[in-house]
Image (cartoon, rainbow, N blue to C red; front, side, top):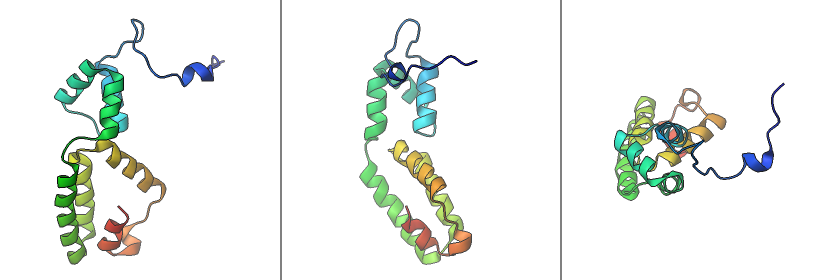
Length: 132
């Protein structure tokens, strides 16, 4: 039989210790859960910074989000005019891979999976992009 989990202890913030250190394995786990992975330099920086600063960084997102949004908005306008569902999928994949705010993109993917619609039914790339 499984050992009962103490809910008070389970919801305590993680604090690194000798028995449970902040290591590369935990940093990688954080980035796989809250983003789409990380570069080696991101992993090393978060390892050095510690868990609190790594989480704060993921929540805040990186610099350049406004410029990135302007760039992808221009692409989205072109996709709307062409009514290309295939290009809309590529646009979203591009956002997921290159956004300075990967947590936002990860959460968008989570909610899209929950409230999904399909371009096969809508048949309008502009409507699909409007859901973003």
